[in-house]
Length: 101
Image (tube, rainbow, N blue to C red):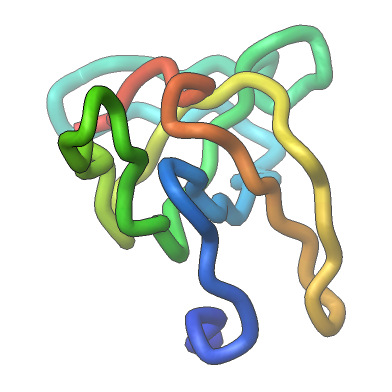
């Protein structure tokens, strides 16, 4: 994957995700099956975190995001953007449902 961090840096608690577009269900190393329907536009999507913002400020304290570059995640909606020929989602960390192990 290209080094996208030279082209875009998410702000606050936003995360840049490259959606997985596999056409078959996947099984994680821990045995969790991610069905094909996760990739449909009915709800959750799966993807890889490619950039993470520095965090948000809440009550004067910096809250650092829990996800990091390279994490595989389930996420809800986000703003779809196109950089070069690739599509990405920018989502708030609160829209990420889970980190897939």
